[in-house]
Length: 81
Image 1 (cartoon, rainbow, N blue to C red):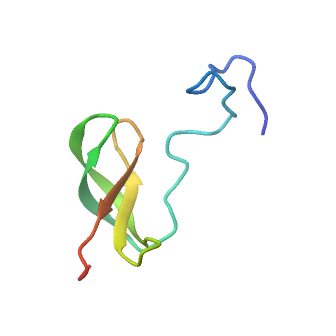
Image 2 (cartoon, one colour):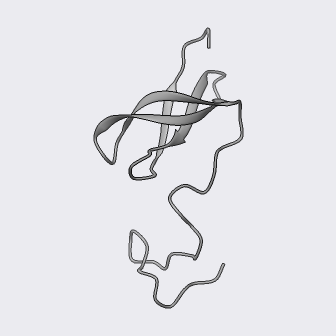
């Protein structure tokens, strides 16, 4: 990856590659739907558009991005989902 000379450094002072936005794209999974989850960066409940994915333990979860800050959000879904 190419480093842009005028780009500010990453979170811990290291260079941040060009094109590494907060929301690189939807994760692989089911259809997009609207869910409510807690954004740890904004510290508020937000409605986000997410996709259903299966976690390593077999549970289903909705994954998406916060519409305000772009941070990755997760919502664990019930067993019937």
